[in-house]
Length: 256
Ligand SMILES: Nc1ncnc2c1ncn2[C@@H]1O[C@H](COP(=O)(O)OP(=O)(O)OP(=O)(O)O)[C@@H](O)[C@H]1O
Ligand SMILES: [Mg+2]
Image (cartoon, rainbow, N blue to C red; front, side, top):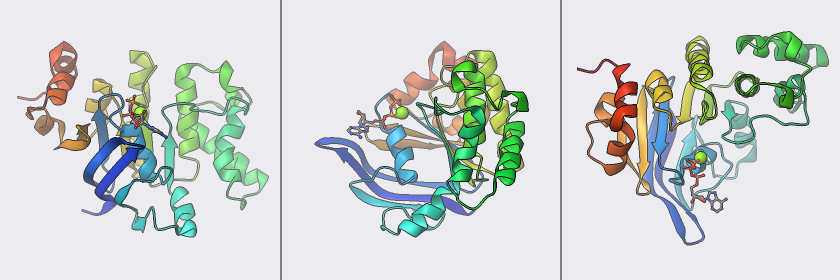
């Protein structure tokens, strides 16, 4: 299988606070890899490092064959157009309309004329199920579910190969959350995306992930498909998958 991200021997610290200690992780083409771990365990930081937005203290992160920290700005710029991101916070720019939010990454390319931009924005909005009549609205006029969809349209604006999702269903009610998960699932297949997703929501995890990486004690303590992960006796894994919530979500997998 082709790998698209290779992390080897990664260490991260902020001041004297050590976040990651010798993390190695390979992510394969077209898989959905879910990253789980307690609050503050360094999930968002790891995503930011894969995106080249935060540097590790030590170690290597190769994304689509390019080392993130070799100071080759041209390589990194190209790489950025091959990744789409849905951030945990601030999904949309509040001062820009829906249209302008989705157009932003296209405008930053400085290569497309206004007609092409318009066509692409409407195409992406259609892909995520947002009707054209909402294009002129401000983010404050949208429902939470719609904000997520528009943010997803923006993440997909440049036809990325990699999609990074940080808590994609946080703040959505169960119905909206299920709808959003279905949308990600169908787009993932349609667009042959590799998805790296952080989530603490078990239903989202069960519905979307091929493999799960558990971040705890500054390391990856478990890595594999859910049926394998739940057999691991680590306190975080037990707390996360155990209990009634866990059993309910896992029922969807129909494990023996
Ligand atoms: N730029 C920064 N400077 C200093 N400390 C930071 C910085 N970014 C993150 N941290 C710290 O690193 C740790 C990991 O943060 P991170 O946001 O990656 O956690 P997380 O696993 O995403 O948590 P959550 O589930 O709450 O989103 C936290 O203790 C956080 O305070
Ligand atoms: Mg986070």
